[in-house]
Length: 316
Image 1 (cartoon, helix red, strand yellow):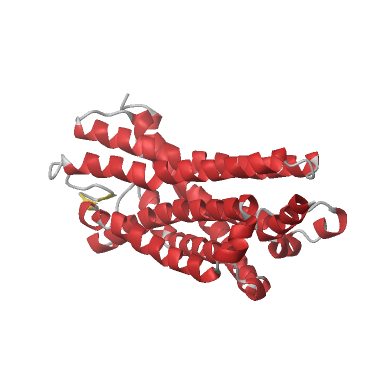
Image 2 (cartoon, rainbow, N blue to C red):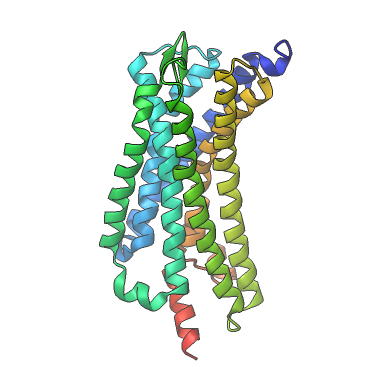
């Protein structure tokens, strides 16, 4: 198996640098534009959704700026030409961006759930300052659970490895990887899915909402769930599988290459987040899709504006 095309470094050299290059350009342009629009267009309406979205944008921009290191790394057939400390920083930033993205997507989904399902509670009790406090906690929490990467990662030979020196603390590393998959991915995914399920339940049982509106809400929720599943779950499954095989001294090139592709898919989420902002914020959608304001009478705002309409309808 080690002799075919899928098992040599040509796979990483030819496929991954172009993918990361495109992701970097799209992510930087999309998220910088989104950040500018959020600050300028939503500045007078600084609600909780804007706070969480801005944090997600900042995380995406920070990670996109580290992608040139990966582009150089894979274009040289996985030979790290920089210092060990920079390798640790790159792996740490990748891990932080991954889990910060997951947790802020979870925060946005819970915020949408509260705004739509419990509009009265949200209006009276939830304030932007609460979102800011939660955002600080998310950054501190994710940085804390990601900090072991600064110890485990490093240059092994000429490769920048997420878990270098596998012979040391071999009983700790599998536990850490599984714990990160559970705490960093599985739990937020369950919360996100439950939140969107609650949104769908309220929207579809409300007779005052048209079938077209319901289909649009279902489409948005479905796209978010598919994005979450494609971007994050394969990475964690293949990471655990790949490193388990390495620790056993086995080689499966399909798993190894699949793990590399899953990292690119995990990075893809930062390119697609601006689409999520367009679905949530009317001001961004109005700038990016000017025609829609003239032809669309039915607006779906999965957020505060939508909850206002739902609240008014529920009083009838």
